[in-house]
View 1 (tube, rainbow, N blue to C red):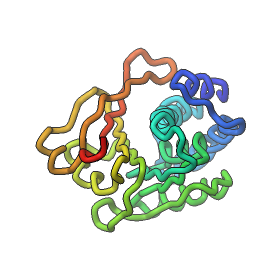
View 2 (view 1 turned 135 degrees about the vertical axis):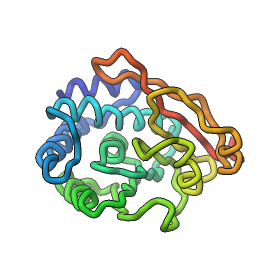
View 3 (view 1 turned 45 degrees about the vertical axis):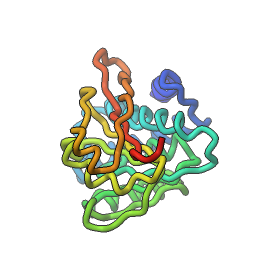
Length: 215
């Protein structure tokens, strides 16, 4: 299973740290251990967690790594973090990233804090809050998966994207947000990034946006 992770990352142009695949597997095992109690996943196996969710996180990590070339460190916010599939995968794959997991549910935040401790991650913080109710500082990169329709969440997330920063939203199709909404939000659409999870033929997409005043 670790080889499947490293192979997928390599296809995305991402070279994982030497201990990353083992850590990602350990993380998936933590999710599997607590999945019934916390309703963390509908996956039927540990391998499904790795393929459907952790590899999704690695797709975002590869995208961020390409745009952070030359940076010694950068900040990332994973909005609606849930079980941490995206944010924790990024934190493990990119040790130079300082990742904030933003989640509103107390039980999930408890799991996230426990997982961070068990995995020995020093570059992750958990923020229990509902997006839009408490101001957040701007981040170099912001990710989102399964929070809702793109047009609904853009106004909430746009203020969290730093000048020159990037917002990456998971999409099943290469849809774009409404032009008027982008203008009001101060964001500019970039070409979507396509990828395929292991064993799948259909393409998935990361819809990408940057601040309109940052070329």
